[in-house]
Length: 234
Image (cartoon, rainbow, N blue to C red; front, side, top):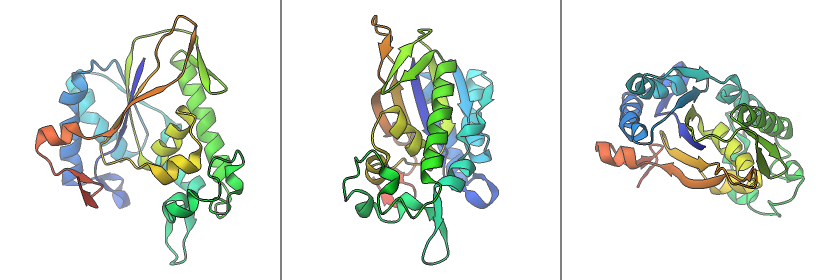
């Protein structure tokens, strides 16, 4: 099985929708994903994720299955703080260099000085872990420790449309990477595609393998501005 985890296009957060640029990014995805032979589409319930999934679903004539646990609003409630300016923000987006310091591999990462400022960080991470495990079990892969038992080997290609903060948190769990390292060292671009392989080994056990991270080749092919989240030209 292969998971294609796709962040939504350039958003209008206030209305939970997409900008004109975001809609063009969404329109750039179907031809790219059609090349991979997508079998099923899943999405966060939020408008910006569903709008990004819509062109792909229409081209491939597939239904969009909604996964409530992928909602960015749930992750935002758990993993955000009010900063010194009175603005709400991800606790892990403020000072990456602090997250990366003082042993970010520690098992009790939630006691790291930079994580303790967020009261619900541990609860939020564990919620996403549990929901991910339930989702993967439905797809035929049951987590045990850092690997997955293959309950029902399949060769499906699954597209999941979700979010940046949720995506980073989920990927740290899927790839068994300490969350402080993942949060401080990785970021996902608007409409970026991350590809995760669950190889069907004869041993009956598989470990997710990241084949691509936040890939934007569909943006390049479509002639759209190659930028990281409207901040940095690539």
